[in-house]
Image (tube, rainbow, N blue to C red; front, side, top):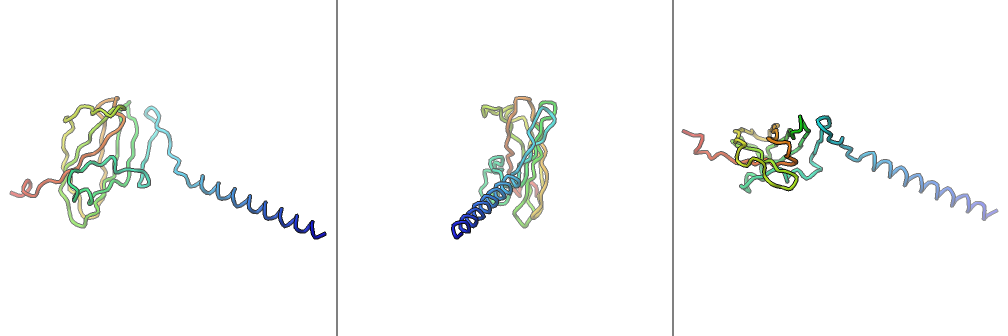
Length: 158
């Protein structure tokens, strides 16, 4: 009789352990970031702060780099061209006068149409976020970065 009670207790422990493991696995897979695939002109890809977005931001000034953050990137193919919406956020409490331009790269990492993308002026106020839009110049483009630089104060004061 004692043996049956131990057996039933063991069975309950095993079953409850199995249920806990199963629920944990379901919770983990349910919380996964399921991104839709990018297909020919139909899908959209979204990258958020959990992803490594800093690889897409190029800043040569270390002080400025600490003041800026890419918080989200949305991309899609539009007629075969890579289209980007990039959320640039300021970590700085004061306004910043900046310029930016996109650099476009093919699948092998070579620059596409270097120097042809214009610099675009941008004033980013304290703690503000703004969307930068870019459209690749060629269907060969597979990735990009955005280069941001500060406009020297002498350049905009008369």
